Image 1 (cartoon, rainbow, N blue to C red):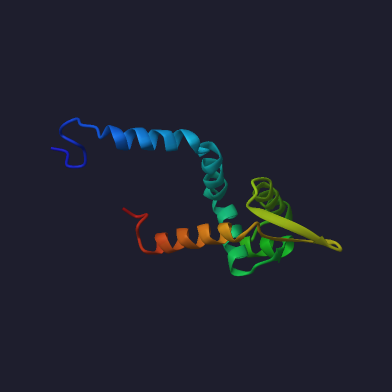
Image 2 (cartoon, one colour):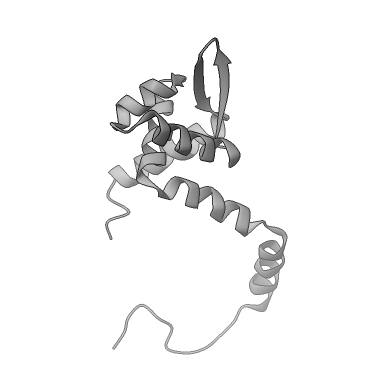
Length: 121
């Protein structure tokens, strides 16, 4: 017998109606796109690196990841287009940072959760 499913069918209509309306009002595609952007290990490493050091140039990020500058630039442009990172140019160098504190919080909480072993279940 399966213990992780209801054995009878019931519904609390007030809760269901309330939640259904909330679900309709949210942008799940945009939120899903944010997580998809972080689903690539190299992009997640970049975001984590930018969490540790608020701003890094493309060359530094390429060296941290042990990838080419072109590969690092590709990932950084992707993160920038998704609104997760921002950049500034200083002479011949381009520096990247996380777009805002929300990104920092999201990544910090994700790693805290992961390190507690909650994702292994």
